[in-house]
Length: 442
Image (cartoon, rainbow, N blue to C red; front, side, top):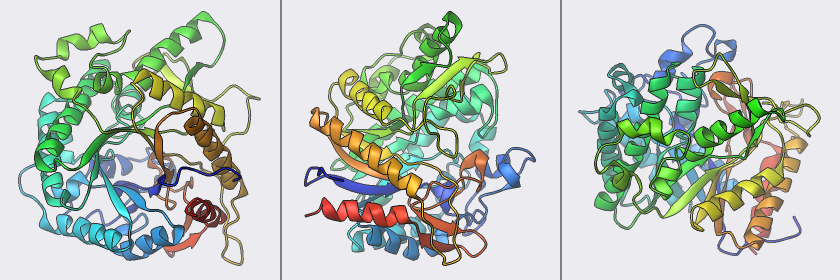
């Protein structure tokens, strides 16, 4: 890249507990909703499960060495709720806490700052059976879990976020039923929206109480929402999709209100004090971005709308049929910055899946991914030049992993994971990004 990032720009990588750790029945970890969902035939491509995944639980020293080799100064991980509270609440599993202690201490020893996201979709089964995100009580239980994690690690971890991409949960898990717990229920969508926001607010309170020197922000996946066709029905889908995808999990946090056209429907769920707790001041905005979102009417979706593939001929697609559109990335940064009062922004996820092939010489040449990163980092520099306060970038993902309903059929990693052997093999994109980071450290 010809242009340089600011000298204090933070370079990082990201992964999540459920997608990488494996060891799902090790050292007292309880079952998560994704463990049970993945074992239902037809839910996951090829019947894959995350029982072993990348075995990060046992191989974390090797993975930290890969972080150090890449040159990143931060790594965004998630703590597994069922590893710390096997029942979701009650007795803490000390062996689970010990794992994160070891991981955090090693990262700090290697000069890598841990950023903790407290929930990346792996809800403990007992909490789901008691109502999950459909229950207001879950927000309180989550706040207690968050407080425990922050108490345990807040002496060393200085950046926290409550829930990864909370907008995905009502949209995919309760509208389309394609993510755990696999529900399709309109009321559940509304309940999940508000209870997820409440859980966010209770986590902010926990950080302020337990680790007042730490920073707290949100992490949400956003992209411009566009109609699949240019007609009235699809424009209606766009308006509703923009509300449900980009606004319902962000406006309450940053503006203190729910957006139209969903505000009136959620109002009966709001109790006195809710919006004040939800909209407490945040220290940063964690923006995940992959692609613009195309929507269309869908009578089989609970909400009547769903995401669809981009119209043909718009440009190159990644291996998961997401449009490569760095202009949409710039547009989303502008929207986030302007709508929410010029917050400090970190790009907490960005990356692409391509059909990587392990060559006979045990190398992976992923030039499509390099081109993707080059174009998106260029758009990020444009945003910084425009004056938007973007202070860091976390590549998704450090390594290939369990990609939810797609199982192991799709690869987003900078590091190739040979699943039969669990060997880690840095791809060409790993070495390319390492060079970018080194060039910007001069």
